Every structure is written in C-alpha cells, then in structure tokens.
Length: 82
Image (tube, rainbow, N blue to C red; front, side, top):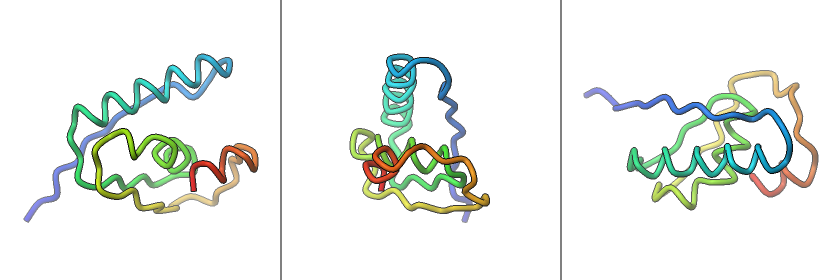
C-alpha cells in the first residue's frame, strides 16, 4: 500500500512579515492537500509545520528530525513550534 505524499515549498527568507506570509501560504497549501498527518524531515520544515499544522486539518504533526538540527531559529520560535 502506497502512502500518498505531497511536496509543498514555502519562502523562509526575508522580513518577519514576509516569513509570516510564507507560513500563511504554507498553511493554505497544506489545508488544500487535506493531509491526515504531517511528517516533516528537517529542522526548517519541522518548525514551519509545527507552527501551522493545527490550521491544516491534519490530525497530527510528527517531528521527524532527519538532519543534524544545526540550523536554529531562536528559542521562542522553536518552543512555539514544539
């Protein structure tokens, strides 16, 4: 049985306002995909999905760290994502 997957990209660069716009676009794209579960693999994707998953309709978001986690985003943002 194949697990359906969808790649969704977003812009994490720019000002705070631009990053919020990127997260908003990510949430809309994920909601349109109607996921059951989010399974991000890297630190940036874990942070982004952790921040928006409740807006997507997914039942869960599993923090699935597959990189070294060297790219950090600040304590407040990381705590909000977790």
